[in-house]
Image 1 (tube, rainbow, N blue to C red):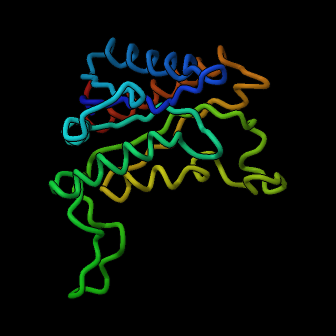
Image 2 (image 1 turned 120 degrees about the vertical axis):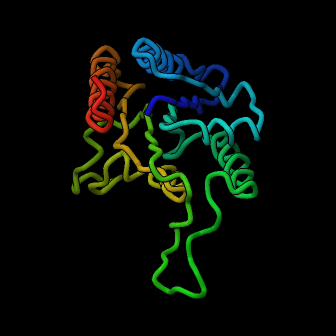
Image 3 (image 1 turned 90 degrees about the horizontal axis):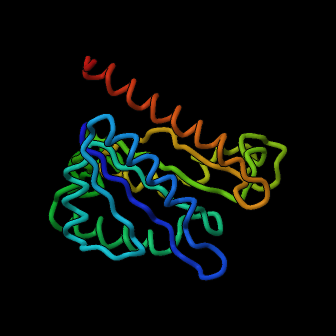
Length: 206
């Protein structure tokens, strides 16, 4: 897990959301990992990108992290456009996946198992207006016991479809009405520490 791609999916809305918080989290993640000698590439979708270059970044990366706000219970629409363009190109080039995994000759092969990126990992890092109490509680109206990761499974499943292992995400809650940014930064560093520790355990690297 030496090569890490960090995607900033924030979309700017003038006078409403300019992306400073997600930029800050992206910078924290980037600095933390660079300081520990990981190789980092970044993409800020809002600033534009080359589709084939993004395919190659995904091929290069051992870990992909998407840093993003949650707009209307999903990622910004520019992220969906990015995914459609990059993953369609990767499918055409057979660089991340070849097909959907099914076979007319073998009924045991399941849908979604056609990825060729086994060994790679993917993680979401998000900012929500929703409070933490809205999640993982069956009595809550909106998510009915689901976690933030469950609520965004449509995003992580794109990477799972291509063979990536999904890592439990990092989520910063209630950032509009009751932000706890200093505490969230501490939690983010703890999350990154755990990632590094797992990497060291996997590779016997000290």
